[in-house]
Image 1 (cartoon, rainbow, N blue to C red):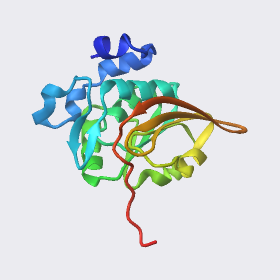
Image 2 (image 1 turned 90 degrees about the vertical axis):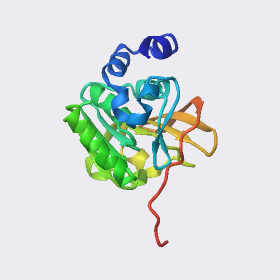
Image 3 (image 1 turned 30 degrees about the horizontal axis):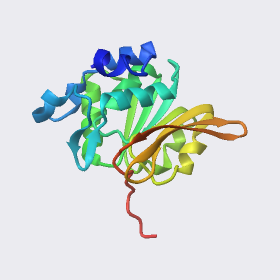
Image 4 (image 1 turned 120 degrees about the vertical axis):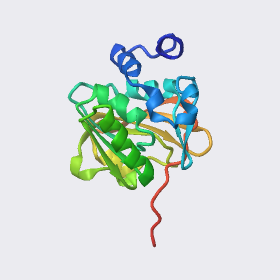
Length: 202
């Protein structure tokens, strides 16, 4: 997977490549789909969610430019595969998942695999994790129709937010928070499942 799907493309950070090689992708999908685990495509994981293709996981991780002591917020734990890759590179990972079943399974799998620097919370990720902020990086693995303002507010100056924005085919954006505001780069056309919210009475 690393040699055929990542290294020959534009994934050139050696730490990201090493993390992608270490994390056992097949452990994060349903048993019936394990023969698909290392293919260059997303895989359904239930509840209307997918595990992203390896290239997208690597691309988004590389875009964060994490340092070993980084504190990262992930919105959309899903299978926890992206979470594990982040945990290989960052000091602490805070991950939020709106589907309770996925959150519980993620906690179990991350514990089984020995990740002690990950904190998982079941709930609506739109508002982020304010009590753990600020973050060196924020990654969103589902697509909102606009950039959630709370996630920007919880980002450190010089921190990066990687997020797919839009409906249908989305723009994968990399935003850097500066002292003067946001620096925005459009990187890729992608397709993620929509970012879902907890219904309110408003």
